[in-house]
Image (cartoon, rainbow, N blue to C red):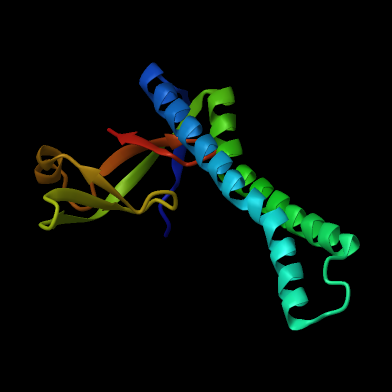
Length: 164
């Protein structure tokens, strides 16, 4: 007999919206940084290949057609990777901000563990979204295995927001 999944949507509060805005800004900057790093390679790499061909003595190594074909192929790869990166992270955070809702899920505690290397307390959960959460020492002492708690996360990006 399985456990019934209990989940519902609630509106984001101001702190949660601010957290998602900061995450969106951070992920957007990371995406732009990756593009700025990859773009020069799209133009330099075909030129470096042409120089390598010139060094080994290939006839007509600086062909404009081969150079622009290489640039187009590399630009295509960069665009595809940027699109995949955008859709898998930044787009989901933006959708969460647009919809302004969070998911509240009722979960059971399946285990507890104190991590001595960084003095943190963790509770293990039976959720598909979040396997463990860090809890306060007071809650760690109070929670028992089998207790039910609620975890909150953004609906699309699954960004963990807290527990109650």
